[in-house]
Length: 94
Image 1 (spheres, rainbow, N blue to C red):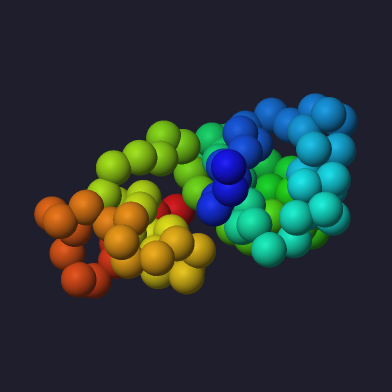
Image 2 (cartoon, rainbow, N blue to C red):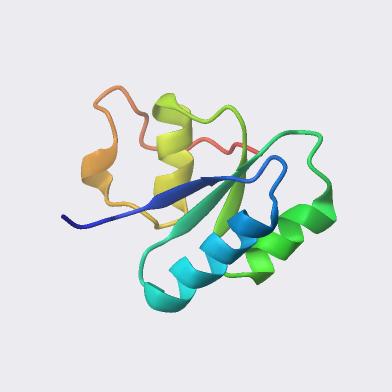
């Protein structure tokens, strides 16, 4: 089994999530990590996750063609992951 991408819930991270992120990024630095936060998640919490090794943070809920297009635009997954209905121009999601 191989892992292409990690999506980590970051709405209200505890010490265990920070540890998970640090260990993952330390042992498998080639695997992109996306944090998923709520619109009310404080910016310093998001920044701490990014400084701990995550590649990007997306606002919940993520899913569907729009999220995949945004992840693709970041270069984190290949074009083959995009559904056929996805437009050529990736959508931005904050």
